[in-house]
Length: 391
View 1 (cartoon, helix red, strand yellow):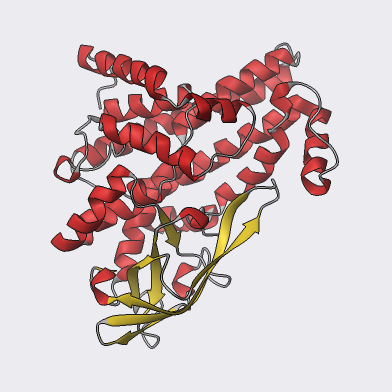
View 2: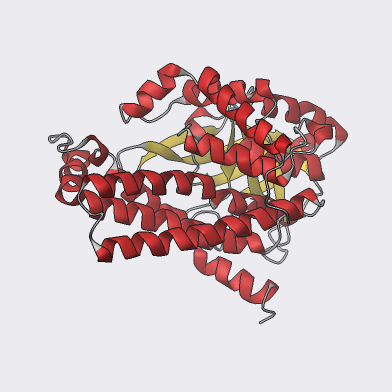
């Protein structure tokens, strides 16, 4: 793996910087600075700008609309987007279901779903977790019963991120209740406007409406919307989760967050605190090691190999780094973080103190989830023990 930047790479990096400077929506930047949560149109405006530039799906094969970037260019693109503090786009279409469709879908499914996924004309959500099936995903109970050329789907999904905006969802459903847990599961694409689909909000501890519960009551789904074979959806699920876990690592975003944290620590007078500086140094070392592991994963993908068990390592260390960043930010902000946390619960107190204190506590609360979603970190350690160590 060659990490030297070629003249072509440097030119690409400079082109990305110039693009962000000229095309990132100024109204979105203003809302970010005000601490507002992005809405549907905020996400879509940036998605469409990246799509127009050809950079929305850096990991997709060229034949399906990918830009044909090298691993180094993918790395540079992610780093420049993070360094410019652009919003992270939802991964469900580009990073998750898109690769499933172009890998396992029929020619008709690829033609129908891939172009609008690239353009942003389809907003996707993920229907995996259930109230009784999270990390133990194979125990899901949502049923899909074949009725002619349709499936009739009944069940409940939970923690469905941004489903309130979604046009379509990809769902794991049980089509053979008598088969072993991982067998008898199918992968369905469901129109979220179908009769019988109900989306109900879940307000998280940071006060945001980010996740939802989704109820499916006698929802009729055409069989042509099934990806891959009936009862073979677990194959698609494992493939998708490997891509999701790689994306969860968030190395570029964590590098940007670390730079912000250093600036806050300096402003709070912690630059000469040896204990705090040691914590920052330990975190930076772990993040650098994680970055090299991510680059090896990108190199593997560029050689035509999908993410392997190393995606579990990326997920574990990436989420641990993210959580430590928020912990150190709360530590740096100190007592200024507390009023904001109380404001979320009561609505009576606004943020006080420096501007950087405003989102310290809400972000800390929100990031508690990262070690759970995409398969808990305990599950990832089991995967590594089995697939890497052979235990």
